[in-house]
Amino acid sequence: MKILMLSSTFPYPPTRGGTQVRTFHLLKYLSQRHAITLVTQRESHISDANIIELRDCVDKLIVFDRPTTLITPSKHKKVLNKIQNFAHFIRHGVPPSVLNRYSVEMQSLVDNFVQAGKCDVITSEHSVNEIYVRSHFQERVRTVVNVHSSVYGTCRNQLETGISENKWRDKLYLPLLRRYEQNYCSKFSAIVVTTEEDRVQMQEFNPNSEIKVIPNGVDLATFPTRIHDPGGQRLIFIGAMDNLANIDAVCFFSNEVLPEIQKLYPDTTFSIVGSRPAPEVLALQDKPGIIVTGRVPSMVEYLHKATVCIVPMRTGFGIKNKTLEAMAAGVPVVASDRGLEGLAVDNPNSPLRALRANQPVEYVNAISKLFKNPQLRAELSRNARLFVGTEFTWENAGKHYEEVLIGTSF
Image (cartoon, rainbow, N blue to C red; front, side):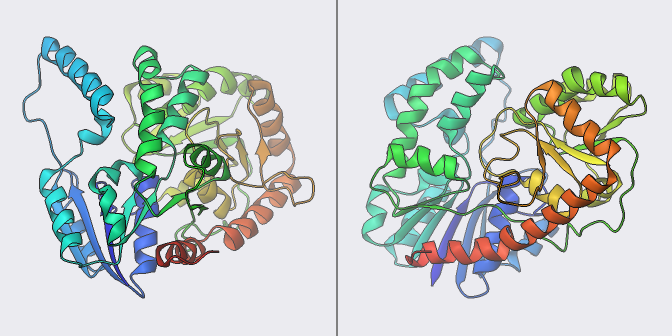
């Protein structure tokens, strides 16, 4: 099968974030049996070595420069641009976040590729790439969108939880995002999501669509389970620290939860491990016991040294790679409903695999239990690793994705 994969995010190295990790491991699996042409965009941090290494993973790699604005607009011009973007969104139904990545040259290549009959399937890896797939493509090839997470659902959740960067803008955008998501999904033969919650959302928009749930996975070799429990009172959060949902999570935990834990356990430390920490994250270092590392060579080494991994997400849809990676590494997890989305960790008829908390007092109670009880830590570590190793491997995800591309059910 000849597959054309579209990803405006350069999916290598597969350690930069959830979008890159998912795209890379799916294309790696598919390339074992199918001819993959990957069309992607390069940003300034992508090295020539990265391109060479990714090229070895596919039959053909086509790289475009990501569109950029060379001149920083004045304050007046910025306001005018925002008004124009909003007007364009209302008129044409495409969000500015999608248009900002759009490449005319990339569109021309995709159009010519389909016209020449060079592929059997087109995949849009993340919904931002849907713009390159035209409605009439379905007459020639099978078209699949790998949504990752609902943009409408994410915007709505950020407004509900009060963490929106610009609540007035997002209130205006919300109905437009609903219309956008509903419209673009109609262009595709099949829709892939990562959780049942997103499936329900997409089914509401498109009742007759073929929608499949394919969770994220973990590279078990990269995240081996730890050999021993380090004990102590060391907490950790992992993730890209310029991401809005991650910023909100660590700020919430640092301000509302950690001080209460430190009253009970004064030696408690909290390591925030991840690349590109935003200014508000860096400012947390002024608080007792908080360490902000920035990018580190090996995430798993930091995980193995932690007593507990916390995932206090209050927004952000889809299965969280950070949760799966901590569970695979054998680190006990305390997480919110958002942090545990799509994971059966505390069902009555299943082994306990993580502890759930949403309110500050619930975090304090759960973390205190784990600090005091090495047997509970060992139980969660063992059960979580087995769970992830059985249910959430990239091989499983790749197999199911292949079935969707071929058009067979699973």
